[in-house]
Length: 343
Image (cartoon, rainbow, N blue to C red):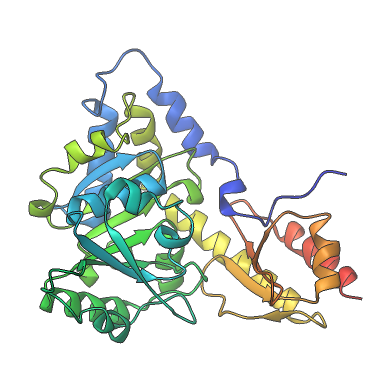
């Protein structure tokens, strides 16, 4: 029997038909390589519609690449990045930010995946001490790796603190669309307008085949990013096919449609499983992730039929993700199977 991967990750979903159509449309004749083409120019116009007229955007292959390019742009090797212990850059990028960007990560314990000003302040002791790495960047993930969403005021408070203390604020927005949809805001309103200096903007988890982008809200900081992107092996030769996808995602509300649907399916799943004896939803369901705990025997049974990540083996906590193409029928079927396993 094949294992069902529907709720394992939003990376498991396919490509949105409108994105595939955009790729096919871009596949007409030759075009100048490395972003010197009409598709890339059109995508840049879409980025500026959403994030601001003064921004620069640099399309890359993947989220790790976007984070590494952002960090390498903003910091030097003797400097450090303050982040949550749950941050993707800390827990799920195989040491790439440290090995490739060359910057140490200073990981902070957080119960809900979200940094606060107080968390950041604790790591500012010892500045100018030549024996210690020097904090240069604060990196937050929106929504966090535990599915929690930073409110606009929370991001603004962190940004203001960073700028008062000479730090840059980086946002890992692999699922930024889900956070913006949850808050009822635009993409720029939950990032650059809050004081974020540089953003890793995700597309793959919201319906693209591949592609993320580094968005700089302060162009004076990113004069060298084109060179850093190349050096970090994130420059696509046939850039038009990445750009065409972003043009589709950022046109006619597609990003919002996809993200809102994924969020709704996660809330539906949380409502369904919360009624099952033995299952406990352990984090607020604010975007498209459901974190829950269930009895070990039930978990073992469920994993024989479904693939998903066990977040904490000791506590039997798991993560279930919903995507742009998750259906209500799939949610109901999954919840029914959980209920059977918990009997």
